[in-house]
Length: 178
Image 1: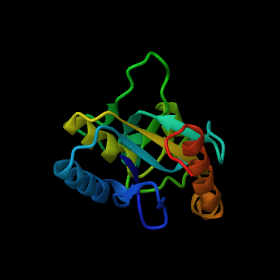
Image 2 (image 1 turned 180 degrees about the vertical axis):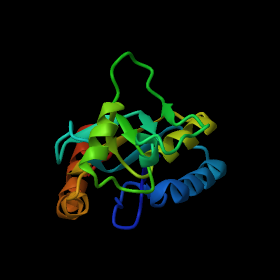
Image 3 (image 1 turned 60 degrees about the vertical axis):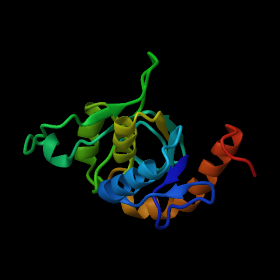
């Protein structure tokens, strides 16, 4: 099953599950309870913490939920905040998820120092639900912006083309047709 966030990030080949960690987790859980998919593939946009360039396609099977408060030692979590379906010995790009978009270059550098590559609001929820249901999962992302003060402006400017690039990538990989 191919998934996307929804709102302005929809694809005719994907099922929208909602924007952010909570809505996506609730919707995907409902879908899995009704009819457990064999595989989950999330497709969407992402912000880069600096290493990945705008319009770059990034595939991942590893998600994290590291909040900005953690960067300054102002918060901690007792839950496991990294989920991975990666089984190979290669270095996977870690996709960080939060209900907030990073707009600080200082925070962007700290996330990168922690090993985070990109951020997407829903991916951690997708990977966590997949883990609970025992469903193989992954994600395909197109970078629309860097996680700095221009994040929203650049996202708006690049989002339409990112959706085109994602569709082309999915076609090239044989995941969708036409």
